[in-house]
Image (cartoon, rainbow, N blue to C red; front, top):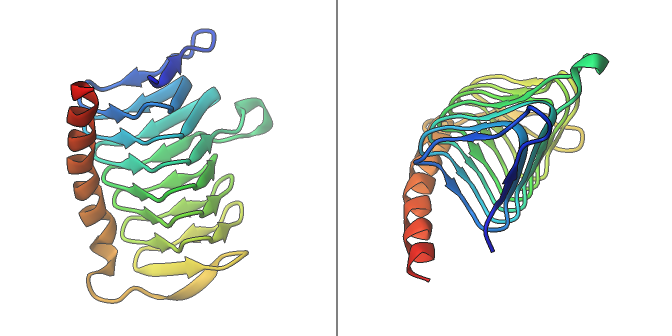
Length: 179
């Protein structure tokens, strides 16, 4: 099973040659996947009415859904910066994850919400529209609120995880080529 990648009208995906797109992923519309980024098994990135960007070295892990809000409704693109870590089964809609941001497994981010560089949204958290997780903070809960300040080194967890996923993507690509 190959990934399903296609244009919607004049909105077409642009995927860097070093990016890893796993079998079973769906990428359609105005989606950019940059150098050494990865989109894993069962993900859907649907840029039908606005732009989605997955920055250099970032990963969108298994089962995550990424969508946008249409500009005519005041909507926003979904922007994932460089070396960001997006955990398994997240829901991202019209939001921004800055360089080195961390979104834990099963978390949801809604329109206009932001995870800053060196910030962490905990697993299972629900970040309401227009809320911002500031650098050095961890937010958790439903709805998400500041849980605590990050401890020394925790602000670098996304960077370490992103580097790990670049290597994992290379291993998966090699294994798939051997089939």
